Length: 463
Image (cartoon, rainbow, N blue to C red):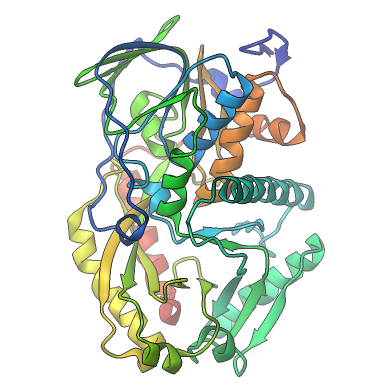
């Protein structure tokens, strides 16, 4: 039993959180370094980055990581503590990191790949659904309130299968959705071209609740609409941290002294001394075409925008965007330091081209304009970390590939909990044991890389 950081009331924390110990002085072992070719970032509305920090600054609240989770945490802290200044630190530019590099699905439904019906325990699934819907609702309200131009569309998503093994996955998930009481439509092979243009797939399961977004545009818009008592520093990578009664965050041009530190930097939380050996920085890769001409759009047919996820988790994700581009995402690499490696871009763009040509033979000559990678923060047990990390240090880490909705809601709820609020969602997050520990190196890299290679091979035509 511990005490609330704000009002002193008794709190129960995840058992793993209380077992974490950090050195008084921690050198940050790895800093974000993403590639420069993310199409979402370059095609999103231009903005003036906020200045980097220099000198010495003291703050009651400091949030590290300005992705979906950090932006949500900083915003809600500012609303909960309107007379206090919140400092938000981003190592790169806002929208340049992982939150601006995903496929742009703000998903509502739970999808437990470890369960036979992909739903699993019904009580847990209902809470996960509530979390995701809450995150969606927060984003929808902010986009409307601040008129953020991020191509948000309530388009739903298709989960599509090519082989019988994939069709069996769709049937199993359909049974899980029945158990959960959620709407869906099974779209047969003959009807699919009316939806997504291509004849490539055998069957798809359509669920209506997913929002499609331009992720970098959304992240930029969220950053530029923060409350006035949030100070955002961009291009300020933290290189060392001293923990104590106050936390001192050092960087090349100065230091920031925090009464309360909130970590929302996913796998880079390990570089700050927490959950070491528990999170897996796995990169996935995407390519985005030039805009389709009017003739190409007519040849493609189907709806004006849509999103497809594969029945096999190692398969290909597709988007037709509002501005008539096609996104292809597949292929994975394990980058233990969380940093981009150019060799994978050169290798995987060829795979993207093959996947594109198999699905869209009617679009010969449509080139890719951009190819990039983006990190997922994964845990082997698919659990996240929420709450206390050390005295005066808190975190919402490891979104397991659901950063848009789950990052938004966990960042918001962490700030509410820090203000003394309690509800069923906060209790659910606090009760999680968090990510489990991974095997040591070199066994970890060997095991993860073999699993990624086998999974991508086994995906077959889904890739």
